[in-house]
Length: 88
Image (cartoon, rainbow, N blue to C red):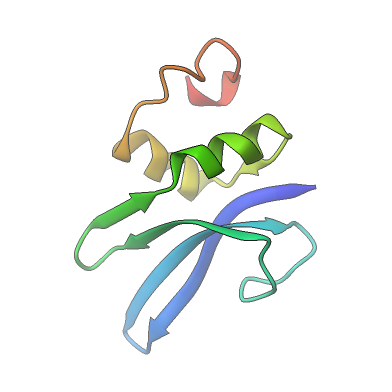
């Protein structure tokens, strides 16, 4: 099973996160399938690769709670709302 979750990068006390598609059995810094976004909590910047995110969601990937909150803040997925119940 795939999940879209955060992968920590950066240095000590200066964390930035990549939003990645990864197997649920992998650890946080494990091998990811594809990098689908970026989140910097210090500068409050978010970059999302929408076509890649839609690709993985259509194939059954699930979101972690934090990533779901980031998606809700960054943009509204109007095209997903009829199909996906997790974006209510």
